[in-house]
Length: 496
Ligand SMILES: [Mn+2]
Image 1 (cartoon, rainbow, N blue to C red):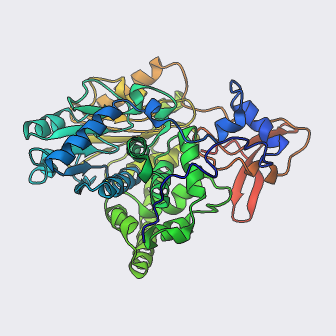
Image 2 (image 1 turned 90 degrees about the horizontal axis):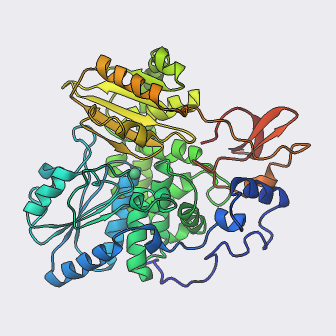
Image 3 (image 1 turned 120 degrees about the vertical axis):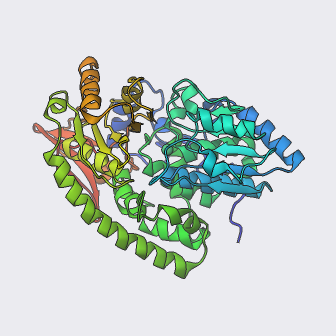
């Protein structure tokens, strides 16, 4: 069954009159005016129409040209991803779209347990041949050596990525990363960048329920801002009918909390992203197969296995979490940052641990562990305005590699031990003006608490577009989206 349709240009294309067709209450519009003070049309900002992808992404013409000449010479695409939900959904979207265009695609998924970020010659060796196109998704913008290796093999190379650009950049033929242009394209996840690039070049294959589903999962999992183009993509996903999807994707949309109504990214990450997991004993290695499968029985049992193993991982996680809470660095605390060094954090767990700590303490968090070979690896998460990637990449001589984006970044180093790295981190913290502790937002200060339903229509909520919060009688209430619908809850939480 082929459910991809030609773009009709019809229903729900834009935010045109979103407010006018009675979708938004007066109170909801008030919130949007507060959140988008400079916009002449806050409702369109909240639910934008289809973005002009070309204006958000650089060097699309290079990809266009490379695909045309690849078609002429008959080579294949080697699609190099990243072993998290963003990277895998990006591989899914890229492979699905390129296959529809008639290209042969060989995916490469790196293995977090043993491999670093970047493009590893050992993974490309034997697959990438002269005349092939090496295309990346969610990775590659710092892969100087990997790209040199591919060029020396006679391959053409186009990088698509969304991570912060830190020179030296690889000598690829094309580098499609919205960071080169700036906001609003920078909101895109890695999967969103590749989807958008191919959607712009081949609009007839862009309007497809499977692609919207994969991109929504990658986008929400990667903690990117739920703003601009991402709100368009998530709105397309909301309109997807589960019946139009193959079995594996149906399992995922069925697990998506309140997908057709109001949902919050943190709940999706808890109920889907964490269930899939990352690293050892996780479901990430089977995600691509599941997204592509239409075998209902296999998908249901695979999902059950993922749920079971995520339950045992979360047991392990709660042990690590309680150790981490006791070990956080008091000096970093004084600067408003959580820094924890714990030996023996299992691969793939550091990021989740950093996310949990940053939610618990409501501030930026860096989790560091020392691997058996002496390499120090770190995972960092942040909230509010704190840009974790810039913070880390500003420490040039400390790391062997460091990168990521504002909300999620990572590093590794073998240049020094933990005591010296710690001194460097603290020293850098002391020079940065802003504090990694966000001010809890307040949208309105009404005389009395509004009906939560009046504002839940603004969903989905997530990074940079948190659930509405109101202050009434000196108390701050934030909307929570529980199983029984939206309600107010007294909290200082950021809602991200
Ligand atoms: Mn990513």
